[in-house]
Image (cartoon, rainbow, N blue to C red; front, side, top):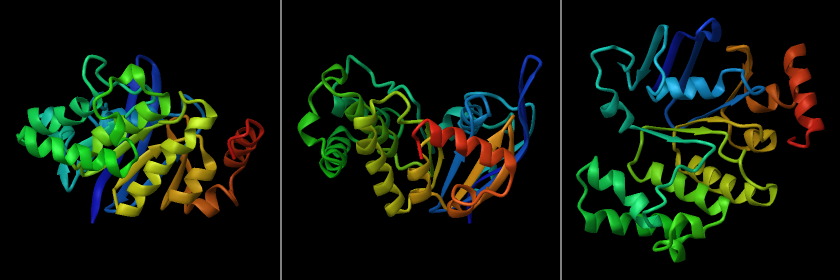
Length: 247
């Protein structure tokens, strides 16, 4: 079953066409990885899926329901989708555990007691139990990003969207964030990830889509697209990534 379907989506900002007739299907329990240069449309696509940006044409479906229908309540849809940005976006005036408990209690009507127990279980699992009562500014960047991911999965989303979640981190901290994503992949979490970490993409992706100018140029299993690309555009992009030390 496809959790997410994107059909012929087009998106422009002013005169700039950002997504061109974009279509993908994301089956349940799979990870789709988007690669491509900055400006290729990856972040815009994720924002469109989460209904933060409206589309100009096409349709997006979540569990078979067209979520881009104007009659749909965007907030109700966002409650089913987890989205983690490059910036951690934690509430600075709330402790780690308060950040994680916020959506379950305010949006999903989970009791504070249950939300706290479940938040502590997640923090324990991902090695952050001792940070529960600390505030975000007391955490490293890697720890803040891990908390942001934990916050997004605390509401048990149908699909988790990850937008370059390691881009703002020191290279030393990258792997501690990627490790949590590997664990979620092992759990069967349905995910769509935009990343420049090609080695990581090879480990977790069921399908890799290489984007250029808002369209999919090449797609397929990670070993094919990343290790043996067929098209010159893909080869050139991966060559640049390799030179930058991200392969």
